[in-house]
Image (cartoon, rainbow, N blue to C red; front, side, top):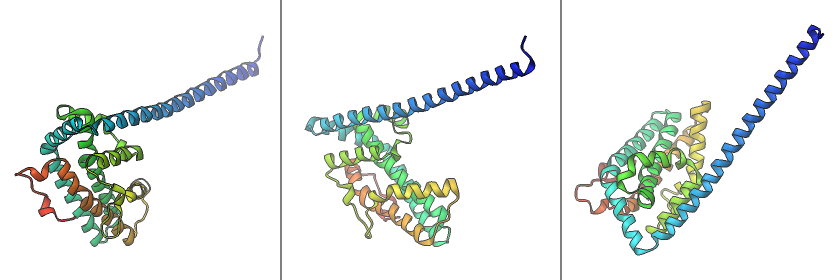
Length: 241
């Protein structure tokens, strides 16, 4: 016969073991998911490099440009208009002393430029073609536009196809490509932690977005065939936000 204390001991031991197993299972799932992200990133980068190497061939470059131009005729103008508006509103926030919103809106402007005006046409040209663009882009890009390896892929493509050295892009003494990570970090601190923003920080954020717009979009317009499009007009005559 076991007394009540024995049952309590057995129960506690059972629950302790179950909790340990749950914790181990949770750890395994997290470790497995993390490793799968690494494997996916490695495979993704390998495929990207292989596709970029193919684009060096004149035939594939012609296909790439054709797919990009076809997609951009429809999708580029509204995204560029939005990026320009958001950049202007970010500067207005700064002038009004609304520094935190200025940082958030500046980062949003950069996000639109990178995701919708840079990576989206590149993904269409490398992988998808226009017919898959809307659905597949959302799946393939997701939040990957924030990853350094995704931007490294864009750097490689832009240098190979258009001859752009994104690290050398500069406007008003700012090299915006190298400031993207800093801007995203500050934006996240504002959004998720309510961090305070100074006037200087807000001005810097607005200038980063404006510099990226001013230096990266002109060659991208050419890549996307918009400079040859009779009906295309840059927002507000091409002025910088």
